[in-house]
Image (cartoon, rainbow, N blue to C red):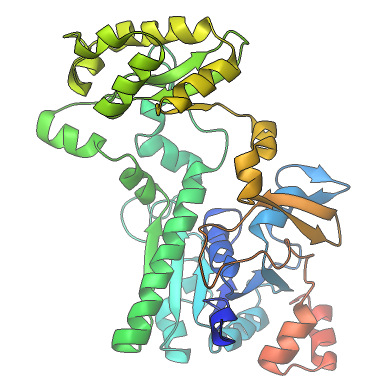
Length: 401
């Protein structure tokens, strides 16, 4: 392996993360995982994410994940001096990630049209609840609203239950990943085609629409308004959560005919394969209740270990439904280092989700967990902007940093 091959793939990319909370900062996290130099620009009081979620000894835990591989500087963008400092940093950056309400940066003189005059190669990602245009663009919003308005909550939950929102930041996480993809597309175009940067407008609800897949074309072409199906799928059966004799839950999916055939033979019911009610996915989805009952009865009579061994050995698709402890203890996840321990000055050692995906030659890495507030302020302002200690002390006295 050559020395160049050992460099992280984004080691030449400088990212300014002036966003807060989750979606846009997660974009910066993904870029940082693969070597980008991510500068987290925080208000002197700190990103609100530092006070959100669980704490241990007053240390915000989720911040350690979302802030990983970033260097933290403080800067008050409400102040003209802060705006001027950001402009100086923009001149040296490749990417700016922000999630202020549309119109805010314009009021501060930090609109893309202004910043691109300072750096024509700048790629600027703006993430907001509803995008930069449209009648809702000025509304405040979080991922929760995207999960509601995209149609996700409407199709999530039991048929006789209420719409269900996820208990974690699903829309934010999906948007963060989509944002990282968008940034990489823009950088590739800049570096191979035009030599110019561009702005990217991403509403949090938009990746959720794409993620929902078939619902929209089904409505357009067949006037189908999907409802809640619990753990079933409208186009594959059996696909559900089943309770074992031990009281554990497992998930099983027979999305292809071959898997259904193997599952039937594994539970000693080969006659179901040619049963007219179950001969293909369409027939089975029309008879989901009865075929689910067959597998529910069999799984309910057997221990978890036997269910998993019997169906997996037969080549059927089944898996335990884990809580987080199960994820930590699973031997496959351990061998692939899906959860990794990171040394941290505040927590000693902290385990978190590892970088994905795995690259054969230039893998990503977690170089450090989320930094302390302003930990790199002097280092970055001195290196990037040549600001002296005396100037930094004055900026601190003025409340700018």
